[in-house]
Amino acid sequence: MEPERLLLALDFGGTKLTAGAVSTSELAASGERRWWAHRRVPSPPGSNAQSDLEIMMGLARDLLATAEAPLAAVGVSFGGPVDAARGLVLLSHHVPGWEEMPLREWLEERLGVPAAVDNDANAGALGEYRFGAGQGYDSLMYITVSTGVGGGWILNGQPWRGADGMAGEIGHTVVDPDGPVCLCGKRGCVERLASGPYVAQRAREWLKAQPDRGRILRALAGGDPLIRSGQALEAITAKLVAQAAAQGDDLAWEALEIAARALGVGIGNAANLVNPRCFVLGGGVTKAGERFWEVMGRTARETALPEVHFDVVPAALGDDAPLWGGVALAEAQVRCT
Ligand SMILES: [Zn+2]
Image (cartoon, rainbow, N blue to C red):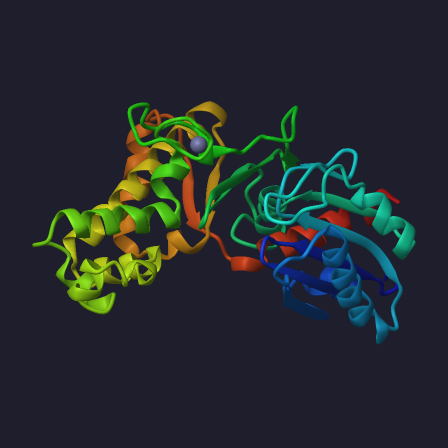
């Protein structure tokens, strides 16, 4: 049996920093997901790359301080574009100072073990593939639907990152060319129709324009006067819309249905192009309930050719999917050595 060593996983999210460690012998013996140790802190307001790195190194040192087994490798999920082959963070959309940051080299110098770095969508795909809902599939697309819509591919058991590291950007595939303008400048992207903030925005606009509808949603948001005065706008989130829809609110359901259909068309198109065996879906919006899943799955199957078969399943690892992807990245480093 191999001597016990530790794999360290780091997740630089937009709003939080997480570090976790697992034991290689435990992983080999049981294959069970269990953190040997795990720490998560919010990224403080006004942070930059340097301060986030210092906080993360503090978490890592704290995790490893009591370890008797040596560290074998580090795997990193980063919430922004990454050149995985060079271990380079290209930039962060949330935190300044990350431009062209050689994160792999930086970590290898400080920790003295091999490191690997990838973006959070690819890491999430790898995490679900190795430890979550994607186990047993040799090809899958992981899609996360929350503030944005991101995606990552596993093909033939390996991450497929694309020529520019941009593979999996299903959020900015167009499903309605005449639809509303997306942040990226195009019209009718999956993200523009299906992400949480846009589901909420749609519901708010309809509540204002259609005073006779959305009774349950209005009540959940604190009552109609608050909505009329604009004070309840922040209370109307995608989660609240889903809650109202589950209780039978038609307006709320219609706002969600647009998201379910947009995702379904995106999935069906991706299925036709690449023919993966499975789509693993995570993120807050995918917790919108059975009806949401039914419409999304049906639309995906109607969009794809009848000869193209695939499963659409909920993610198993939740917010920890990218961190488990970090474990898988670290594991691959150990196998290489
Ligand atoms: Zn877009």
